[in-house]
Length: 344
Ligand code: DP6
Image (cartoon, rainbow, N blue to C red; front, side, top):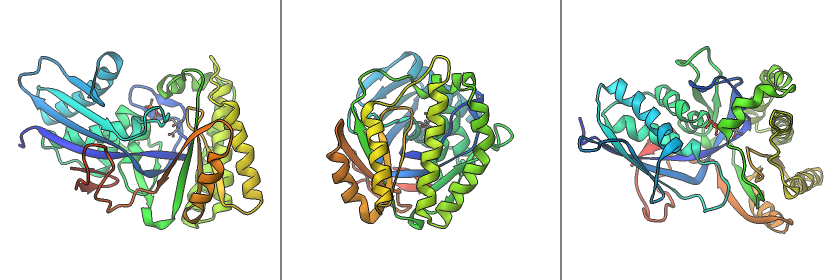
């Protein structure tokens, strides 16, 4: 066994067909399948070190110690790893991400996929991509999708063992770019975990779930055929349906700001006039505007001119052979790949 320490790097992803609601909250078994793309440039780097001298697990994120719920969620994944490896040591977990502060980019996918990789490697387990995806899912559903490379589908599965994500196309398949328009949110948002738990209170959730296999088929085919028009229409429909469920749940969740809606209108006008763009929004006010790579600069320029947009982040599909990252203090680092995530 190694010195019980390992470091891993993993990325965020953006869902085109969204995960919203669980059929089992503890196991994070989703109520529907989802499709996403891994994002280049939005990384978490995590070091896990199991140490005999530690009286309890410790979590440090971006240099600050985290206790309470955040720590419990991490310990839950460490417990699964300890159980599989048959060890009983506490761990220090140090995590850092390079997402600009206040950008409102969900970090749980990058965080829990990096944790699953680093913790399992630290204890000497060599897990398959499927096993890693499953372990990451137990920490955060969307993290299951940051393990395989490129364009990814997370299948509902029948249970804990087969609810895992798989690559449906490699990163080089299609040069899509995510231009994230950062909108200043005026009020604190409800996190995804709380949102999943109340999804079933919306009278629209069942209709959403019944129609999801159809939307998954359309989205998967649009990606495989590189059919941007169909892709843009289906991601906007899926995002709008999920937000309809959010807005009509109890309590209602209204993530959109005025600027969010302003961007929806602009994106549709731009598309109608020939610019290949489409929008999708997660559990927040920021708008992910997807476009073909050749148009990213133009889309960025237009978004920066929109009222209420404080920043625009640009992220392509994470290349499978990428060997460096932009973390502030790591310079150019090498890592071995394991799907989209990898070990440093
Ligand atoms: C709206 O994966 O963040 O971004 O499992 O509770 O961590 P937890 O939820 P999370 O939910 C993501 C919700 C979403 C849609 C998506 O990414 O599919």
